[in-house]
Length: 374
Image: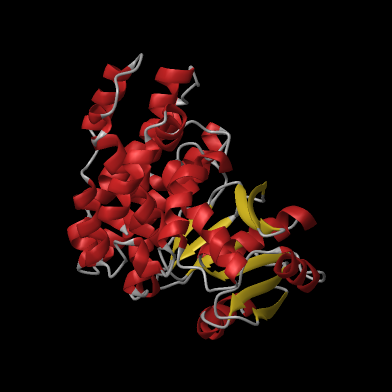
């Protein structure tokens, strides 16, 4: 389905900048008081965004969070909620965490929100949920769906290469999470929403096909990546949960994120960690036939055969400057080993990790994974 008609279906104005700016958004905020929310990294975009907003809104102000990479924890959520007290609309100027913060603050305060996207780095732009850190744990909460996604492709094409790579990692992960969903239907009877599944699958294939253009930094490639990132959010809304966009690879990322938080260290980009998790999931799928046979295994083997090889994902991530080994993230080997045995417990969701851990196969597989990817 064409991205604009899909966005219209969900009431999202996915608008790309033209010579006239963002006319649909400009008209929408005509009588609104707008708060721009940025961090120390994205604050450099505030002057141009503020000029556009001030020329159309009833009032405009900026809140710059005092960090180059804020975390969506309780304290930061409170700061955004309190800062928005006298405003009607929250516009995140950034990507992942800033978008999440504005979506959740908008949900708590019943205010509309949107995002001026500064990088094609994650798939949560249009989702109705937001990941938060509460008490040191990663928790997914309901959130306000954005009213507007504003895309200036001059900005998006100029994003740091590793941030584009993080977005690619988040999309290539869908090969695995969709397969996790499908094998769960085979082995546990879980229902698959076929519309959400097909929508996400088609977007992944289109993005994968545009990777050569994306590597060259061409607008066509960035546009296909942004389409896939937006569609991921819509697929989650259709499914009523994050199943079309999140599987074992995301559970591994969440496990590592909590480890970084416990150690008080900077958290690597979400899509970078997810990309590594994707390589692990692909390896586990492609070596499944080496493990003992089980009831229903033939259908699972057939699904695994349709997946790309982990080496392919590694080569793509490497081309964007992303790590392809966990040691490059600054995590210990023992932590990665614990991740392989424990990450599946983070969500009540059947995945390839669940299959390996509950069947007793992970002890041998963990050594193989660590040898290849640590």
